[in-house]
Length: 41
Length: 466
Image 1 (spheres, each protein chain N blue to C red):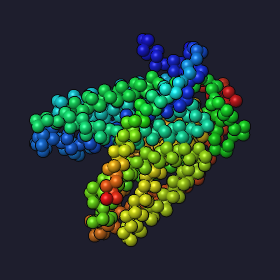
Image 2 (tube, each protein chain N blue to C red; image 1 turned 90 degrees about the vertical axis):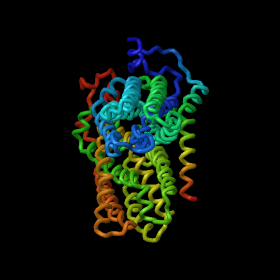
Image 3 (cartoon, helix red, strand yellow; image 1 turned 45 degrees about the vertical axis):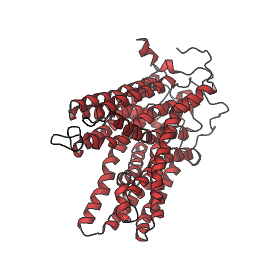
Image 4 (tube, rainbow over the protein chains, first blue to last red; image 1 turned 180 degrees about the vertical axis):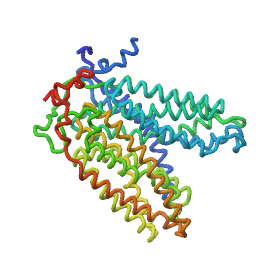
């Protein structure tokens, strides 16, 4: 059974978790956006 | 054994103080990885030159042979999601994510051996079968967990995860090109090495997701959240057993709604580049068409979050009504934009259409939760994904064959897609009718407190808690 100890999530943990997935995704989106701009050139 | 028990559902129950906002990134860790499937075509050309290096030589694989890798993976995505849905639901998200990581990375490693030994059937089994199972299990693994963590915003929560599946290609595509560049020499094409590195990266990412993920403790509710006292007409408070859901007309109506919505989108998604150039010869160049495809991918991803979040406010059925009505209008408008030469109008129409294609995927888990309750929503969602596999056949066939028929019968290329657009609009009318017929699930399908199946694996059905 799970214990009932506190396991408070810190802001740092949240930032790390979101950064872990957000940074690669943002870089990929940026790269795609740069390529997509060729449609308007 | 200690590792295996770490994967158990009981060991993933969140302790007090755990933030539910840790769960979407955990889900994204998996969906961003398996979303690589959309970027598999990056390897097509290098894999046709493994022997010839600079150009295809006798004995090199053909594009038609390589095309089967993706098709097999898609078939096993739908099949594994349907078959393993209940196992995923009972075992919890960590075990499912861990298994998906093993399958997905294992698929890359086996494919690397296939490339190294130039054995195509090993790639079919590696990426196609093993990787396809990783796709299916990974896709459904976080769905019910997210819905339980966000009872106030289930559409937004699942939309975030499924958005990751659309966004995975944005990471995989440049990463694959970069790795291929690093490992390719004058005498060797570095596909095998790229597969090994990608397998390692994806395994690491997915394992991190499985470590982070938690399920809420029984009875947990978000702070300040009060469940509606009176049940909405189309939002049940009861649960329907996974296999009983198949006996309801609601399941099959939603199956058709998803299938028709995806059919309408998937056909144009695959042919967007050629279609834009043929409808606007001289105006849209191959480079501009590639930009158009990139823009469509962004709207596909963004639509998954936008429409699923919107459904939390306007309702799931109404969201699909918007897809069908707006989609009908836009598909009917596309031939007109072609006839007046309006590139902007054409691009805008397709960007909205493709956002609704993505939205169809991301809104459906919450739709199922509204109809069948949260208990088996992941497993029911898994079975519904067979609609995706079916649409993957209908959509491209409709677009390709009708265009081919028109061109061989003397229709100018610029107008060859008009019939297809009207047929797509017609499909959405059928989808509208199916969606209109969706009513609340009959009470005889609801699980009772006395139902022995409710005791697996220790969670009482919603009806029993009420």
